[in-house]
Length: 215
Image (cartoon, rainbow, N blue to C red; front, side):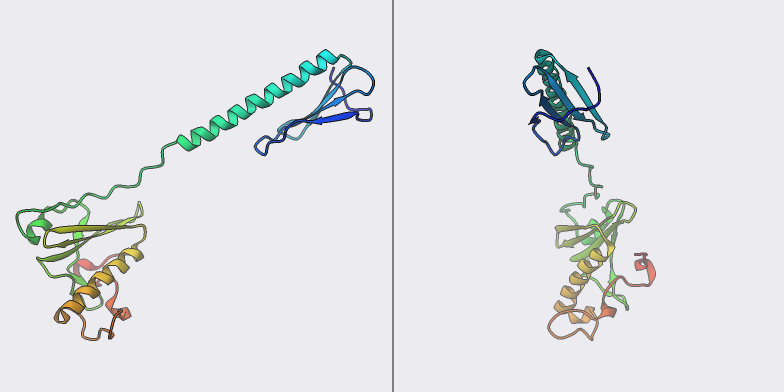
């Protein structure tokens, strides 16, 4: 029988708590006589009282409440498992650069897949980048999907670096440019700092010709 709680509570037996379960149930037995009531709070915060003077009905009701909680637990665990097993969204793919060819770097550039572009000049004044056809730097940019990459061809050996931001891609090319400019000063700026590092005008893409681009 369902009615509002109108008498002092008797002996309490809390149902095991679980942080993932929003419902709360509590069993209260009558003092000195059979039966009792089950106090339950549902997922929306409403409280209900099931009361009976029969010990058998009370035990059966409490068992049913436990079964409902067990079914709820199973649903929660199943949802958690589904989330864990849900495949991660595939990362946007970068077209693979061609590997070793019988020809030289010029032949390799002719085989570049769509999206890859050779970078011949770098910095404010468009200083030489790399040493064609032996050392070539190429870039891939897909701003819509947030994919950027730098590829390097060095006498047939290929390396690729992937980035999520254009600024990281620029920094990678800054480092490559500095390496080759210090190896052959005639190809780069004449005001390189002593030791290591670049000045601001040595960095970032050449702003003229085909190297002009948006961040």
